[in-house]
Length: 439
Image (cartoon, rainbow, N blue to C red; front, side, top):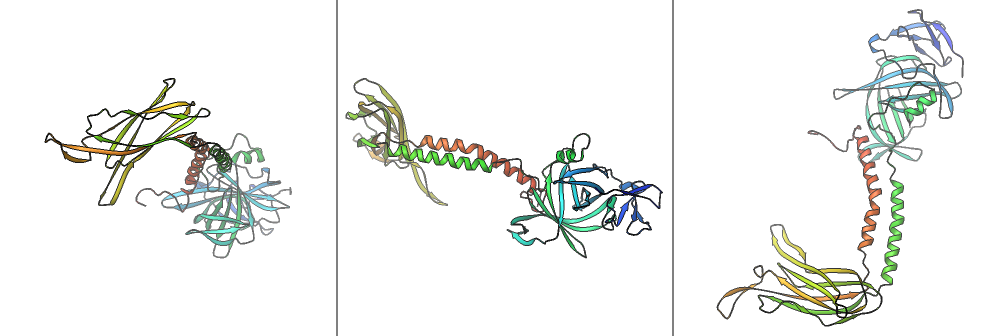
């Protein structure tokens, strides 16, 4: 690193060190806050900064640290402020110098740090939906915010004629962890590139005492700590395995119809509603059995109590299925509710001879039509035609859907957290995704 050169402040006589000599045009005396012109051997006082604006840098001037593979020395410090909608936002900028690499900056706001490098090429103007954007080095940077920034405090030396009260139009374009910033004055537009740097790394680089102040909130180019993209790739792999397994299971199941018969049921009916089917044979290994009921019920419901009984051992599987279907029309048009079909799945049924015991029931006072009986009494008559189908060795994909849903929980949870992080980021921008109050 270059050696420093000391001068005496013409205003207070205090020592002022020049660390970037050959480049510095102005320097601010740390004792009296006088802005000195050091562009000529005859040092002149340009102006003074009011004491009430004094701030203490978190990184003292003259400190050296290694960032980005090079050794840097802090030679200047300034505070910039934005006044917007009755609120004030201020951030700090540290001017870094290396005699072989020139100048860089460290910026800090609410514990969030960026290592900033000025660059010459102009990014290509673009659009992202309805908002401005720029393209640079193959990346798209979305406009985050723009405002007038004012220099409110300066200390140390600078390669330009620094002064408090200087104003620029600052615009930030982000593609985390990078931010491209432009500063526009009446004379020129300058661009810089900032890389998000955790405070702990800054403290370690400069060997500062204690620990870095904690970062508050979500910063404009802060990288998301939620890493969920890789989980979706893993989920896709497991989903492909599940699909292949489902195809394999479906290929090697017989899906064989072992019983099918149509029946009718009517209310009122003085006869016993329950009945048993003929015996049918379930052959082969222990496997699944699917019972399907298809009916013509409409604007009513029917319930079927079933018992699958082994005629040789008496072992029984009891279950029930309900079908209900309603249809009509209103001011919004035709509508339907429910289904005329229902299915029951029994996962493991041993081979053997079986029969079904069926007991149907319906609401005698709902739907149907009125009939005058022989006794002269008028009664509701409901009738349903239905078909029972039994299939042997049926593939059940329910568990595959359950597995797919459970496997989706981790990546979905991470994606929701990542989305929430991005919402918090953009709430601080000129394009908040959620507006409050009457906006």
